[in-house]
Image (cartoon, rainbow, N blue to C red):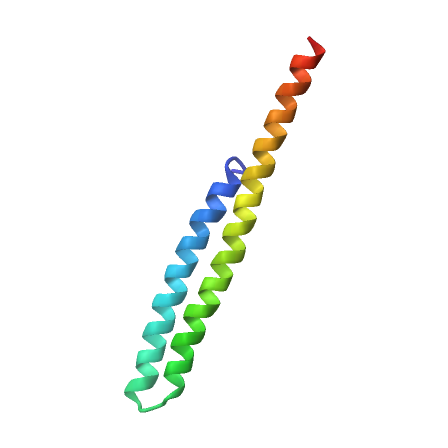
Length: 83
């Protein structure tokens, strides 16, 4: 369950970005059909908000992968030193 959590977070970042953009477009277009110009703000906000959200989540996933890789390398170094 917790194996490869960094990669899972990166995939989740992509999925959330796509869902935010699609949801914002649908909701914004529905508002624009009723001649409510707030729909443009909703579309722009959903795209920017989804991008910022995915950027943060992707970065955390990348940091997690890097820390995992460093921990593995340090563990193998210790084993080689002890021998």
